[in-house]
Amino acid sequence: MEQPFEKPENLQEKSLNVATVTPTEYRGGIPIQNNDFKGLAIALEIYANGVGGASNATRHDYQLNRFASFGAAMHNLNNPNYADVSPKGKKEGSYSENPFIDGIVRAAKEAQLDIKTSQWSISYDDDGQGRFHKTSVYVKFDRQNKTLILGLNAAYAGDKVEVELAAAIGVERAVSSKGVRLELPEMPDQDLSVPLEKRQTFRLDCTPIAGVINAVVKKFSDEKVQFRPEDLVSAFMKKSEYNEDEGSFTVSLGNGMCLSLDINGGKRFVYPSSEKGWKNLVDTRKADGSELVLPFPTKSDIYEPVTDHGDDPKKINNYTLTMSVKRESEKSHSQLPMHTTKQLEQAESVVKFIEEQFKK
Image (cartoon, rainbow, N blue to C red):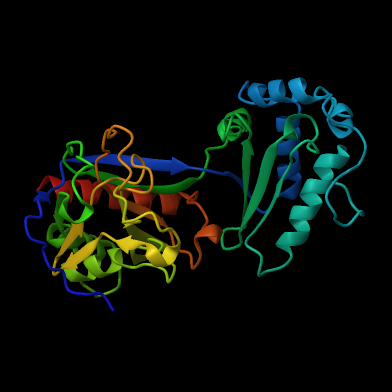
């Protein structure tokens, strides 16, 4: 049970208010309509035959290491059609004359036949043919809209290979989330010589944020529910039994869409001494009514343990809040992106409304 917040003597505190509101959009996956596995094969063939230059870094790494092992030496980057080492799958029927690609598509098709399966994926290292060298492939199954979502990620190039393939076949990439980033005021560097319990903390009043969420729900959702600021504070205080941050707030907008609110920045769990292990972690985030008390330092800039002051303090990143419209999902790994006109238009409307609310 969480203990009520008690302000330590001489603790420095500062109030946080939203400074800037910036639109955000994250894309990922290439929609292939009508569960067209033949179309999936064609897209993979186009990728295998060379699209853009993003995979050059991966190809260069391959060339440097191609003689490091017998398996790698068997590859030919300019011709992915060599021996059939495709994934397991049924042999009857053919989606591609390239046995490697045909195997990928057949394996994805077999996975899609199981209605409990939300996606199929595979990651290649030196066993990936041609441009599939050190490349990950996934196919998500949007059963409701009868759509396959193809994803590609290559070493040294990331999802740039997916961006180039989408452009080559003339398909807009799907949208993972669309929303706004709420930037909180710039913070000064923190003096790490100050004991943890006396470091400056920041108070975030969730009242105006709850007001925006309630306005969104009233306009876009059929649910007649309103949230208190304390509900947001409680959501941000969630954690796992192993002291892992699970603080997040989500509300349904109907039509399979939802609005989520996350906080970024701050090192919530710290080791106040040299003793490690999750049981020794201390939660530096506190709840105080409608306010959230946020700690220093930030996770990305300070190394553990926080009592080690051997290095000079680094620049502190600002706290940010992100409000994102996305598709509803019980599990994050099975979440599908937005790609239909209706989904994208609804997300755009919600984001514009949120921006208007923060300008009031």
